[in-house]
Amino acid sequence: MYPSMLKGPGELFADFSRLQDRLDELLGEGRDSSSIRAVARDGAFPMLNVGTWEEALEIYALAPGLDPAAIEVSVEKGLLSISGNRATRAGGETEEIVYARERFTGPFRRVVSLPEDADTTKVEASYRDGVLKLVVPRLETAKPRQIAVNR
Amino acid sequence: MQASPTSDPSPSSRAEPAVLPSVDIVEDSAGITVTADLPGVSPDDLVVRVDGRNLTLEAPLRLGEADSLAFVYSEVRANRYRRSFELSGELDTTAIQAELKDGVLKLRLPKVERAKPRRVEVRAAP
Image: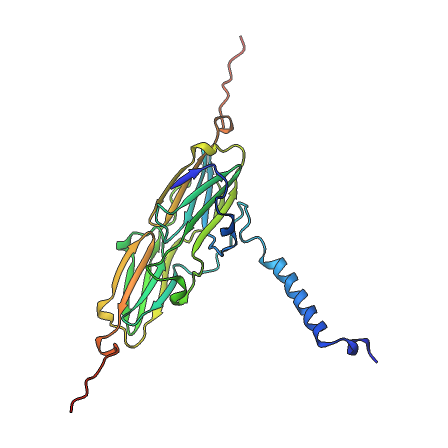
């Protein structure tokens, strides 16, 4: 008999679980630690959240520090695109010491595919506290409706 | 906007998932400037706390009326921002200035007088 054959299947999973814990420990730690170290950016800019309701679609783009007039929102063939340019920071004093540069700068573009029942002629955009909110209503014909039955 | 040297009033909230805001940190001869991206935070909701040598930024993140769980697609999942920094002893924690505009926070942490670079005047010997 081989010793490995005597072990139940539970042992194997316990080994994997321990390995997983170890990996989490090595990779996952330190994200919220109290240090002045820089954090690697992993997301695109601006980050998007999308909600869908019966009457409309809401798209939130987290784009802080922009001039609302300089944000370009366009719709073409069912694709809604948000683009613009986030200025590089001023400064350049020779005696400056830079400890972290995590904030996004430069041109950006995000594209969202709209559902077929989106009314692209009535898109509303507003900008508040660094968040661009887009409301795309659904077509009247796509809204649920009660149809009266005639005698 | 508050900047009070009190301890954390809600230690239980630490367990809640939070977004780590991106920051730029730059030092010049008079102090340190921290610029943080906090989209979706209104100036009234932001808390900047100094506890000893720990500086903590904390704010709820609100996107519209809806609960964040109602989104069908979300790249931002947490309902709050939180990040803390360790300050060096040469910063004057009583004179921190904070300004939040369009979701961008500018924090100015001046150095204490003795930590600023100084030019020493050299006099000619008699």
